[in-house]
Length: 434
Image (cartoon, rainbow, N blue to C red; front, side):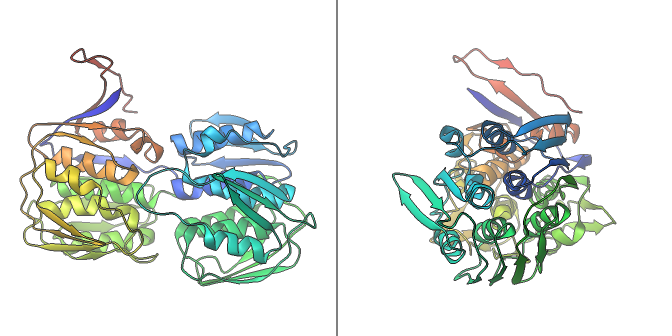
C-alpha cells in the first residue's frame, strides 16, 4: 500500500508549471475516436484518468503513440465498435463521454455507468435527454448504458437542459458533431474545458459555435480530419497550488495558466488577505501568514468551482474567524471534513453548508483521501500541520494531479510516496522532481 507521508511546517516557495487540464483531456480523448485521421494532442496531463482512456481507445482499435512526455498521437482510422474494457470504464467518471463519441462514430454505444470519485449522486438524465432528442434509443440496465441511433446517424435537434450540466453539455456536443443538421443546446454549461473541447473539434473540421455561452450551436459535419491541438492549462491544479501557497504562508509563481480562468479563485484568496498578482500566463501568490475568514458558495462557471471547495475549506479552517462554505453543485462533498477534524479542525456540517470556526492549529494524523479533490485538501492540511501526516488512498489524488509529489518537493515540501507492504517495514519510493 502506498501512502503520502508529509512532515508539515514548510512554507512553499518557488515556481510550479501547471499541466494540461484534466477535465478537458478526458473529453478530448474520446472525441479523438470520431476523427478520421491522426490527432496530435499536446499538453496532455500524465494522470491515471487519461492513461485509462487511452487504453480504452487502443482496445477499440485506435493507434496511440507517445511522442514525448505530454504529447500523443491518436490514429482512429481503423477503430471498430466492440465491447470496451469495462473494468477500466467503471473506474472513471469520464467514461460516459464515450457514449457521445461512439454514437457519433458508430451509431451505437455501450458503456458502464460513470465511476470515479464518490461524493454524490451523478445522474445522467440530462445526457439521456440530449441523446433521445438527437434520435438515439437509450437503455440503462444492470449498470450498463446501451445507446443506438436506429437510422445509423443522429439528427440535429433543439435541446434545453433542465439544469446546467458540464458533462451533459460536453456529451451532447460530441454526439451532435457528426449528426445531420443543426443542434442547439440551451442552458449550456460555460466552463473553460467545454470551450476547449469545442476548439479541439473545430480544429478537426467540426462547426461548433457559442461554446462559453449558455447557447451552443453545433452544425453537424460528414467527417472530422486529423490535426494538432494543445490542451489548455488545468484551472483546478493551478488553484490547488495557489491555495497551498496561501495556506503555508509561502510565495509561489504558478506558471502556464490562463489568469482569467482563475479569477474566481484569485478573488476569494484576496478576500482572505492573500496577495495574488496576475501576469500574462502566470500568477504570483504570496501568503500573508494572517488569513482572514471568507464565505464561499460553489456555482457553475464563472462562479467558484466545486472542485476547489475542499482545498479552500482546508484553508478557511485555519483562518481567523468563522467562515461559511455552501456547496451549490453536489449533495455530499464534505466527506473530507471528518478527516480534517482528525487533524484538529472545528467544522460543523448541515447538508450542503459547512461552518468553519477557524483558527485551527492542525496537527499531523493518519487520514484518507476520500476523493480526488478531498485528497488534495488533505495534502494541503498536511503541509500546514505540525508533525507527520499519512494519507491513504492516494490513487484518487493521482487521477488528477501530474507528478504531484515531485512538484511539491520542488517547492520545498517535505512529502514522499512511501510503500507500506507490511507494517512496520517502510521503503521510500524515489520521486522525480523534474
